[in-house]
Length: 217
Image 1 (cartoon, one colour):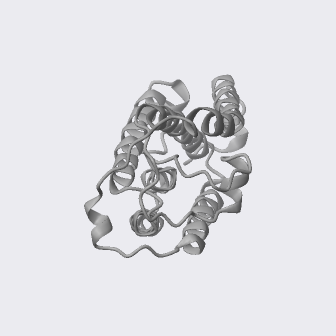
Image 2 (cartoon, helix red, strand yellow; image 1 turned 90 degrees about the horizontal axis):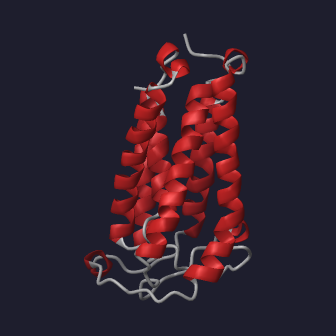
């Protein structure tokens, strides 16, 4: 039987973990616009000769990308909100992947692909870019692909797991098709998301609460 929120909040360690990781999430959200617009915007990057661009004529897929980006996490939360360990683990994975992404964007700065059709995403422009709708240098690795792949890794239900996997593949294809990302941005996102998921799962297994109420395999 899965651990309930009432049981989880009786555990001091769980409450500390949840508060600490929520703080990490808040810090990331507040710091990201400054980082992108003050550091990355003026940092010289490079362009990549992506072989896949020769196969796909650029097309605007902003609407389906936005719907999948908002819809998939919403579905995940609706089906898992009663499972505190799943929610905690998802927050942990997202925070670590997000800060890893900031580091990789800085260390491996890329310029927007030639022929890019800017992604129209009012939520992303407002929250991540601080209102700078023209920002397009948050490339390696893809936040869209890493987030959806994390949902696939975290989900236990077979049908939903398949849905999140197909969503990841589709989003990756559409992002490259629209020239919003290079192919390497998508592949890098999958690798980092998997490594972070495995690392967080290993660390959580070392805690008493996860040893007693393991819900993730």
